[in-house]
Amino acid sequence: MTRIAIAGFQHETNTFAPGRAGVAEFQMADSWPALLTGSEVIDGTRGMNLPIAGFAAAAEATPGVQVVPILWCAAEPSGPVTDDAFATIAGRIVDGVRRAGSIDAVYLDLHGAMVTESLEDGEGVLLHRLRELVGPHLPVVVSLDLHANLTADMVRHASAICIYRTYPHLDMADTGARAFAALHAQLGGYRPAVAFRQVPYLVPLHAQHTGSDPARSLYAGLDRFADGASTHAELALGFTAADIADAGPAIVAYAASQSDADRMADAVLADMLAAESRFDCTLLSPDAAVARALAAPPGRPVVIADVQDNPGAGGSADTTGLLRALVSQGATGAILGLMHDPALAEAAHRVGVGAVISGAMGGRSGVSGDEPFAGQFHVETLSDGHCRYTGEMYGGGVATLGRSAVLRVIEGNSDVRVVVTSIRNQCLDRAQFTHFGLRPEAARIVCVKSTAHFRADFEHLAQEVLLVEAPGAFPCVLADIAYRRLRSGVRLGPMAAGVSA
Image (tube, rainbow, N blue to C red; front, side, top):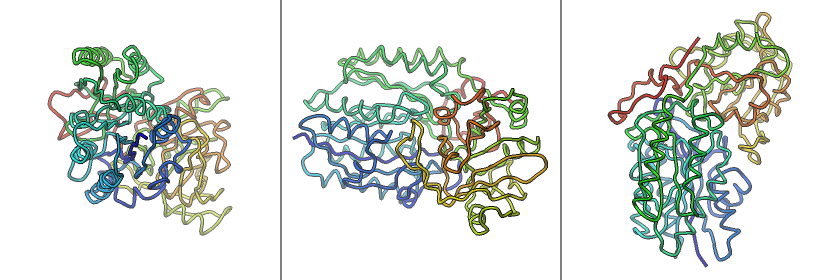
């Protein structure tokens, strides 16, 4: 029986964002399940679009293979992981592998953009510690997010790396299955040659959408290198909100010979260099986006994405720039989600449905250029916040929103309803509206605090999708970012200042 130890430790770190991810943040449920151990790792993720679920399913379907689950956890993106949390969770993973007895391989479900209070490359350090335990020859295969900031240490210590190829990330489970195939091919002792390249420019996340070119063509182009489980090229587009030396796109390629691996990596690098000017980084001001939405013909809704206040990239999910534009222009038939404001949600639960509360919404995180929205709000719906996803990306999972409410803003002639939550969640699934009785398909304007994941479940509803540059802790206009640690010579990418109107 082949025994494979499996574990997961996921965090996408926004070094510009407030807050920290401590042990408690990894233990709690939010967009993903709470920390899982032992058999819970399998049972608690089964059927979900998660890499570890895809890996486990592929392993279970392969005769003679036994997985030994250790631990899996994830925390909502935020500022750095605390040193204590990293030491605790990485220590439990390494100790779990040590206690697993005789094993033939290790699989890790990682993100690739984890920064701690003291470390720029959390994944590289974890892999190094694991290598010290298992030795240089045991297969250690890793899956990473498309937004990984790939490092030389990750490449050095992993036997193979597989990276998502879609944004929105619809292929997370598929990537886990690819990682199993890559690992299984190494069980007989075979080790492919590897080549690593870093791209000399950054790409803002809202321009990384793989449903549009050039990202669509770049990822489709990787298929020409696939030759079984051991010959493949992988591309990460990077996470620009991490102020570290290795931020940005990177390529890793595996082949039977070093010359073939180098040839593959160089070809993908050439594709990336040729694509630099084709990434669309356009952003609109909130006022311009709302005016455009109000001028749209009736029928299908206009979707407006508040890309810089995305909690899925470390945003606070409580900035009010887009909300102000809606109300000031008298927008009607508008819904907005998800606004993180535990105090206001609790106030709504205290007074109950039908009541009117006065106070301030959002704006409490200290984001530059933002402030609370003061007003009166009619309480329309209340919920405990256990919302089952129905969209393709997270379908089968449960969003844990905490005590939540739908509040209608009472001001002028506007008709704006806001879903207010007690736990930060990215608005990427229609269920985060329908759970509260709101119908996105019937709205005139749908506003989401998301950068690109929302496209999977909202884009087909929309007559138009608009991306706005409202204040937020997830900067998308790279020229505005005061990088201090980025390696020398890295360009800020095409149209770094965006196009605002």
